[in-house]
Image (tube, rainbow, N blue to C red; front, top):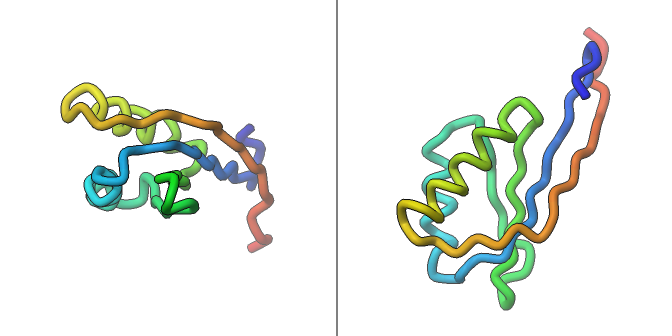
Length: 89
């Protein structure tokens, strides 16, 4: 990870309580440039959170705080890391 010009995208897949989707999204939006969220399976309340390797720890800290401070149920189903080369300048 982290070679010159390399960006690692991190996708966190999680199951959440449907009633908390709006809260999770609003909190992540409040931390500009850390992560974005989308719902990938509405009936089962499955979300994906997209961040970079630079902000992965911060994204997990936010998710942990939501669980500990607000009692939000977040079950991590998987984490995928995809390296991609940035375009030449």
